[in-house]
Image (tube, rainbow, N blue to C red):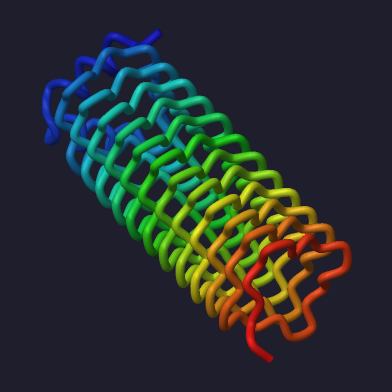
Length: 264
């Protein structure tokens, strides 16, 4: 439960809160389970605060510092987190449906099992993050930096990942059905057993990517760079590989039935 004194200080205004935090830098702040729906905390310092199960739905958290905060099971539905600092925060099982996180810092964040469906994450930094089982359905991740992130079994169907950085990202067993992946950087990415049915990978960089046993049925891979990629046991039925570079790719056991192959 939220500490009544801490909650009152937060709601008394930015100046009071900032001054109090400066005077009590080592104090463990507890705002858990508080109802802060629709509140304005633009630029507030909530670093390291206990915010478990807090209701921040529709709240204004633009450029708020939430680094290292515990937001496990918090409700951030439709919250505005533009440019917010959420690095190393715990957002496991949090509800971020339709939240705005453009240019936010989510590096090393824990989003295991979180709901980010329809969220706006354009240009967000999500490097080295734990996103196992995270729901990104219909999310906008255009130009986002997801390098070295763990997206194992995550749901990215219909997500926009155009121009995203997915270098060495682990997308094994992820659902990328009809995802937009044009011009994405997937160098050494792990897409083993991923569902890429009808996905759009035109001009994507898949150099030395692991696509073993992936489902690429009807996928668009036109002009994709698959140099040295591992496609062993992958299903490429009906896939479009026109203009793709398959130099050194492992195609052992690959199903290419009806696929449009590059002209040699």
